[in-house]
Image 1 (cartoon, helix red, strand yellow):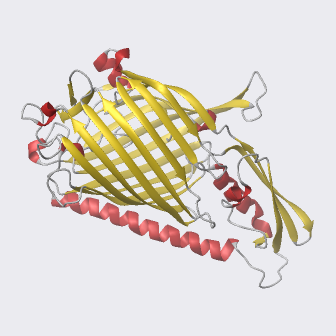
Image 2 (cartoon, helix red, strand yellow; image 1 turned 180 degrees about the vertical axis):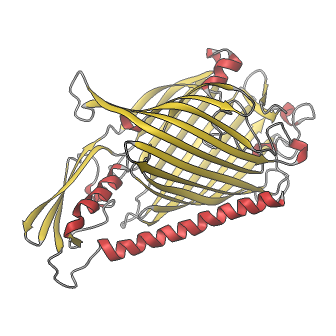
Length: 483
């Protein structure tokens, strides 16, 4: 146990040191190579007289300029113009506001240039009907519940990804069916005059007809359900963030949940440790401060670059008992481009929760969201200290575009790119003895092969055939982003 804690502490130390070092390198590079001021005349330098932005009908021009490392009046090294433009083009594309970004320069004379930036805007408004599963995966829905269509939610989701042209997002969701959800969120990442600070707000109501009240020894969620809704949750939240370096962001958030569950959930028959106390109504405050760094060729499906994050979150006002919990977390990803269209990525992430005696709702570890092992998607592995490592080797097979049958300026074609891949994952999740399961407190490993299909607006569809150390194997279908 002591070795595990030391290992996690070592991992978090690496995240912090890496963050400081990369931020320092970025700052030094910026000062030395890019923002060269007019302190002397050198034939190897050219001056930016103007930056001409074209194609942005809704997006404010200063939002685009915010993503360039240079500005009017700066001097750039003549032989590195292509390098500067490539980095700026990547940053502008990674705002997820455009389907195309092109950049070049026009020489006005021997030592002065105009930078030309041409963009094609995406569709920003998506009023879309919703049809979703309440289960954690398609595999679980099919295998465990025989693809029961009564276990779905449906409704409408309205998203505007560029509400006022400042990259601000508005999201409204109305869902009904096996669960109900009414939610609203708004985020504005550039709210001050220097475009370095922003905020977000959110509120919503969620009602569930069933909830996982405990995890079985076989690492399956045990579900409680009754007539009507057995869990009602009301929440509000707000966050404040600032971009303290070109690729680095820091955020602080606070949220308040008021949760009510059926009386039976917390009794001896089900789980008296569900909330860590016998109350069925809980006022749950959450606080979080986190740091994120991303310098990749694209956000949704990176093939080259580095990402990392780390932070601390606090639930409850006390230090122990009930819902009180403090969590340290961190993650690191390295994306590497190889010759002949081969790519690889290495990812590692970990969590440490204090104290080790936690309410059931605070014990989530491996098996939730992206913190999981491919091949163990059907299992949940609770824990108070957990680690997950992943390696993927992929090969780009082909890429093509299908023209739209009718003319839409924002959507002239639908792109498709296919990657074949092989992967292996490892993991470990520690939990106190009284909550132990067959997959807790042991080294875990999985592997497999698959096909990733990258399409319109960085949507990714994954077909994966995985196996695990339990000698199980199967086909898994997944959607979303990331690789």
